[in-house]
Amino acid sequence: MIRLRQLLTPLLFAGVFGYFGYHIVNGERGLLAMIHLQTEVQVAKQNLVETRATQRIWENRVVLLRTGSIDPDMLDERARELLHVARPDEVVIFTPTR
Picture 1 (cartoon, rainbow, N blue to C red):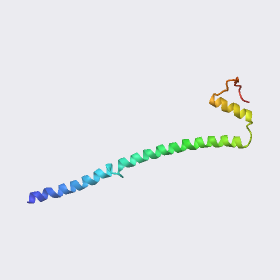
Picture 2: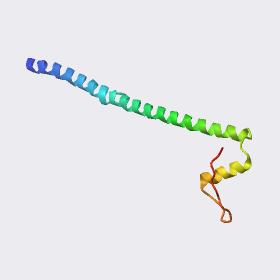
Picture 3: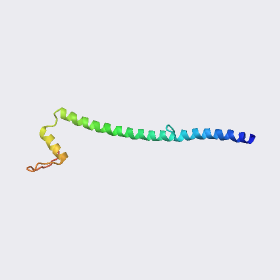
């Protein structure tokens, strides 16, 4: 009986520490989950930087359109250049812009 008590107490503590130790590392809010979330945050920050850069580009294009600094012929030429589209009855000659 004394031998069983001597073994039961350390086994109980080992089980409790093992349980909590496992969940500290592998649990839903454990160390591995924290590392995974930090990686996701870094990816999201990179996506945000790229999205803001794209937004600035489009805002600049919209400002150019609003000020009327692009005449309609140049806009049509630029659209055709970007889309590589020409009507069958026309010849497109690309010249360098000023």
